[in-house]
Image (cartoon, rainbow, N blue to C red; front, top):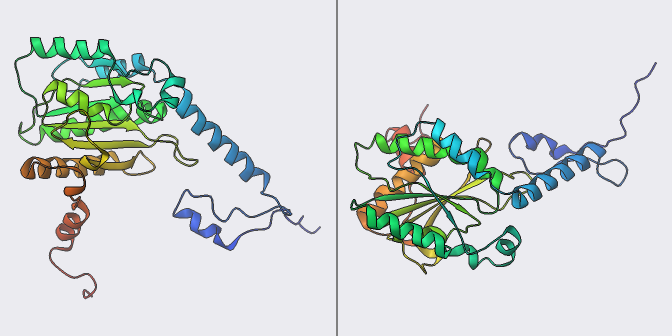
Length: 275
């Protein structure tokens, strides 16, 4: 008995899918996509929509942070932007860049009761993907705090802050309010059809309200299927050291971490000439 011929016509590019999550080499059934690939696309689209519209479970995140036993200086501060709800947040990006009046007052009360100076303010923002924060914020903060501890106390941490309905720029206002030299914003990136939980990290030296994106450095696609937490933390620490040394960030601060890794691993040898 002969085997039944598959209704799906393969694609020679499918072999490249081992290197990427991109939808390439899908094949075809007649003139259409194979049913399996169509269902996978619809699932990815639904996951991306859920990431944007589902609210961040702040209570669960706080519980996870508490159970992690991280060496944080204070209990995390909960803040909100001027966007009152998710629909307003999506329609008015400008409101997501500024803190609500209540949140500003909360930060002012904290500064009035705290006489210490902070070097680093870590800000967790829900952004456009709550799942990115829910899944990746805790392991990223854990890795970063541990790496900072290995820096022999060179960096003094401000209280961790968690912001609902926030955009990247809201970190500048928080960093300024806390008197930090540098602000680190962990935010849910706009989800793609293969990455609904991608975490973005933004660094700004000398944060203050009204700064443009040109003053920020970005590390993108931080997640288990993308840039690992360990590598992201090492890249971030390099940028933090250089920002403090040069007192700059953004387009004027170049990320040379890949060059540094190459120099260390090659041991000053040219791999092209090695046997």
